[in-house]
Amino acid sequence: MTRILQIAFWLAVGLAFTMATLPHPPDLPVPASDKAQHMMAFATLALIGSLAYRGLPRLALVIGLAAFGALIEVMQMVPALHRDAEFLDVVADSAAILIVTVLIAAVRCLLASRRRPWSKESET
Image (cartoon, rainbow, N blue to C red; front, side, top):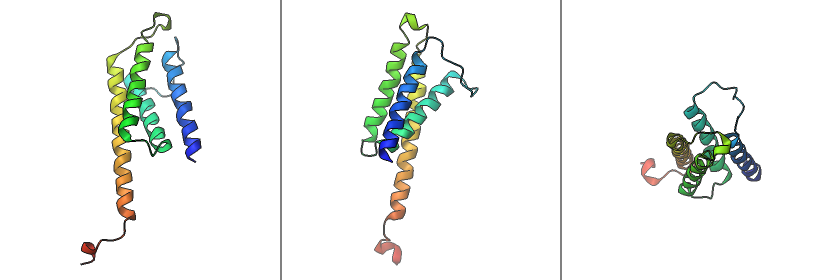
């Protein structure tokens, strides 16, 4: 299952990069603002990345995905792409990454605490 998630993660990274650097990307079926689209894309990347690379430190995933978002904006500065780079896109990407990463960490913590055997203090 991990291998499938890793493949899905890299396919999603490739799709995100392609969509972000196409001179005229297709319209998405979801009517959403530019920032909402950024947040959906990077929330998805953070979710799949967290599941695919469980052994990777969370901070490494956050920094890596945020750097990827910044790279996309740098690429959009290429005049031939006819795209507009925006700092707020990186902020939206980073916010989505952080939100998903924190939620996943909280869920993992909760699940781990439920799997622990009862402590002696709770028996009294």
